[in-house]
Each structure stands twice: as C-alpha cells, then as structure tokens.
Image (cartoon, rainbow, N blue to C red; front, side, top):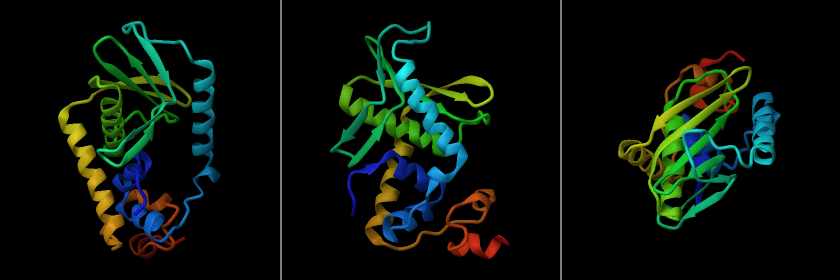
Length: 197
C-alpha cells in the first residue's frame, strides 16, 4: 500500500470509491491535465502563490501561509494547502476553487476537514473556519464552519480509502450525473453500462 495517502486521494474516494480502485490498485491515470478547467485552476493557484503573498482579509490579523505541504505520521496523510492565516489563537484555512458553482459539496468538506487535521497536527492550533474562494467569472467567498463532525467524517473517509487499497477489491458505487463526465466511464462497470459514448 502506498503511504502516505494524499488529501487528493481521499477526495477522489469521496467523489467515487471506484476512483481509488482504478488509480491505486490498477494503476490507471486520469490525465486530468488535459481538461481545460483543471489547467485553468492550476494557473489560478500559481498566480495567487506568486502575487498574493501578503493579502489578508480585513477581519483577520496574523501571518499568511501559502502553498505549504503538511504531513501527519499519525494519520498516514499528506496535503498541500492553498493558503492559511495563522492568528494568535487559531488557523483560518483558505481554499481556492476555479468554479462559478458556489456549493460546498461533501467532497469539498472532506478536503477541508483533512487539511484542517493536517494543520492542527503540525501547527498545534485549532482550525474552526475555512474560507472557500470561488473565482471563475465572478469572485465569491463562502465561509465554512470546521467542527468535529467535519473532521471525524474526513478521517472516516481516509480510513475507507485505505481499506479499498489494502483489500484490493473494487468497491460498490451507483450511477449518477458524475459518471457522465468521468474519465473512467468506458471501463467502469457502472459507467460503461449506463452511458452511450
């Protein structure tokens, strides 16, 4: 089994458990860099890493942390934050998304929960909130409360991801709209039986 897992590995499991099987057991690649939205998102992240070094929202005072990688031996997990603000008594996580869809999906909550756990394990300060900044055609900030439920759900998802990798058995999943644009739909038993392409 490949450890540490990354936050991305677990978010992919949260999106669809079969992703974990295809990527980590069969060794298949997504080639997501060929997708325009992914490429544009990477460009946006690089721009903010370079140009946004000192900006801190008005309601916070503290030290800015940008594009920092964290590792947790306890959880066998690694991940890279977009940004965070370290105040005197807490860390505020900032996550950037290249999207006009401002909904906080379960997989995004898993991402925020895992990044919060990594921050707390390494910086020894609590994470109580995250700011998700959506910016494609319009910029919108969405505040997310990071509580124990989000963190526990994230750790449960991490353990489920590890379970799929350790047992090597393809997990169950159901067909839904995510299957229509999935890079594995032609080989997936669920996606291939329900799509015409």
